[in-house]
Figure 1 (tube, helix red, strand yellow):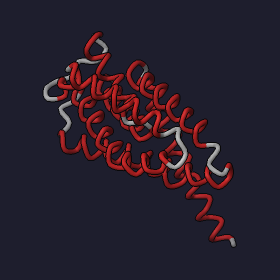
Figure 2 (tube, rainbow, N blue to C red; figure 1 turned 180 degrees about the vertical axis):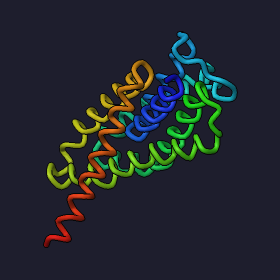
Figure 3 (cartoon, one colour; figure 1 turned 180 degrees about the horizontal axis):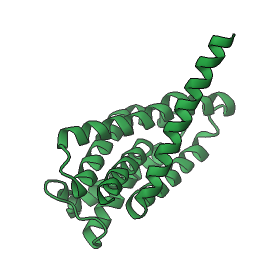
Figure 4 (tube, rainbow, N blue to C red; figure 1 turned 60 degrees about the vertical axis):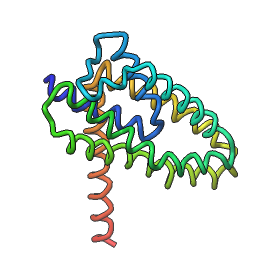
Length: 189
């Protein structure tokens, strides 16, 4: 069971990084520094350095405000296209390694894929739809909602990772069901 919770935690943290790279990084850094909820192994224990924590706070503040300003948020999304998958890779590798001896390369690729997928859906589907329906006015509330979801998902991934597993199963099941329905509709029509 401990193996599964470590992997679920890794998935949850890297998915959260797809929405906001700095919230889950800060959560992991602070919890590893001040509690025994997370114990990072080398080289991931570097996340508990005050320099790293300070950099995460500064970059997180910049990203927070940049994502709330119209037009600047588009530039921010372009920059975050590179940052969020890297953060997800780091979080997946750091949290999966706590429980398992999973290959760091496999962990990082998994984190890149998970956070990159979440970021791609957000920036290529959700944000353009918000722009189309609200004329850009909806970006600030959507950005705030993304930050809240990233925070909530990070906390769940750390404290109750089995919930992440349940969410993961539901998302995969829904995706497969939707594809199956679409395929049957095409056959029938």
